[in-house]
Image: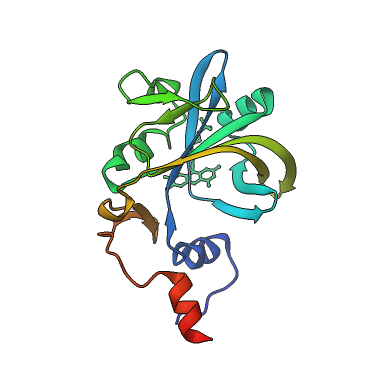
Length: 182
Ligand SMILES: Cc1cc2nc3c(=O)[nH]c(=O)nc-3n(C[C@H](O)[C@H](O)[C@H](O)COP(=O)(O)O)c2cc1C
């Protein structure tokens, strides 16, 4: 292990050791779909159903979400890495959806969902909290959809500041592991 002074870079390096999935958070901007790449996403509560995303204060998408009051989280598969790169841009020309297979949300009809995402979570903003240079958005889940072939699909991962893919294999489900441990 490397001990470091507590700098922003050391913090970034340490946090980079926590592997995450990658999502594109979409919303609506003047009638057009808009979005950004996000890995700061987690589920929060089952009752009620809540998720959390953390967006930098300077995010253009955050401004759109503040206006629309809703967003969707698209969980990316490994083959969607180009979308993760595209939506990490601030250039609005990269955020055109015309060449991306997408459909409208079941509950939030204005929000675009990627057809090939592993899962999509439609949310209304339930709460908004300051988080340093980020804003934490608590989303009340309005609808979910997920790929039935998830076990055959590789998820897109982000680890040590780089995209990674893993081949999804059916391993012991966590529920069974917990049962075995008891
Ligand atoms: C893998 C990856 C994960 C990211 N995760 C986040 C995140 O969780 N929150 C965030 O605000 N920005 C995140 N970003 C950066 C934004 O996608 C990027 O700043 C984008 O340009 C913001 O677009 P916007 O200003 O149009 O909303 C991430 C970028 C990458 C490549």
